Amino acid sequence: MNLQSISDQNYSNKNYTTNLLPKAEYSYCTFTNCNFENSDISNNVFLECEFVDCNFSNVNVKHTTFNDVSFNSCKLVGINFKDCSEFLLDFNFRNCNLNLSSFSSMNVNKTCFSNCKMHQVDFTFTEAEESKFSRCDLMNSIFNNTNLEKADFSTAFNFNINPAENNLKDAQFSKNNIEGLLNIFKIKIK
Image (cartoon, rainbow, N blue to C red):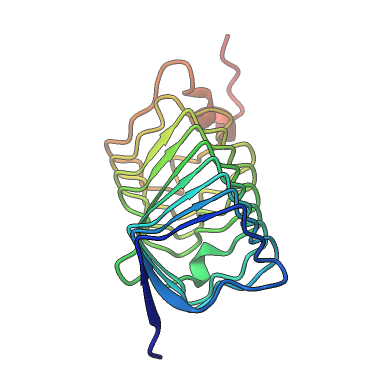
């Protein structure tokens, strides 16, 4: 599929719920306060782009490429990131709502999640080695057969990770949040 190339553009206050974002390769573009809710951004390519205050709830990202992409203060509820292209996948999330999204069976090594609300996010069979979950609320998120080697959970909270079912070698936790590793054993910490 030959995509039109669009570079160095700024998009502000656009509504892509009815008029879909044109299929293209976007590089060095910034999208601010744009609404993509329930839309289809499949088969697009985003290279070194930034999304700020955008709504991506329930967006179709099938075969979408995200390479060196930043999501800042975005709503990304219910997205199956596992459907996007894993070729050159590189993204990070700051101050985002990722509730009910899925990274299942993906390689998200070295991904930075900072100050994100991540309730019921699926990390089943995910490679998340060296990923950072800085000040993230992981209430009811699913970690099952997940590689979390060298991941940083030192400031994360509300997580429940079974050490027997996940690779936690050299992962970082704090004394304040260790309870999230012991819940499976029904141990009470006072």
